[in-house]
Image (cartoon, rainbow, N blue to C red):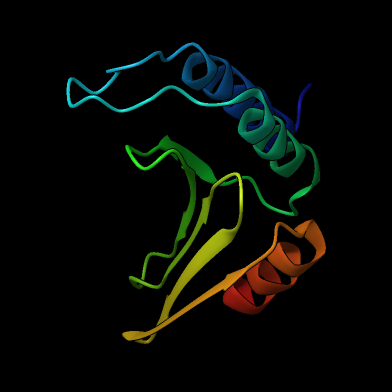
Length: 115
């Protein structure tokens, strides 16, 4: 029997495959499709993050990874070819910062968010 984590990974792989197939104008607002390099980064996230996120394409040539707690706390990584933009809202206090793609740093932020 598969664990919940393995089921979530399988679902995220399937969702990423759908995102990979999105072409130009996928949102009827002239958004571009997603590069193989960006898809590869998200694959790395699915393979290596300590908790599986919800995954969403954006119209900004990025893919967003989200975590949300029942109390309203929210964590978002918006990953592009060049960087990771992080939005972290805990106890209604937002923090935003940008860094280079780094799974270790992302896992540290996820641990802090759920810690």
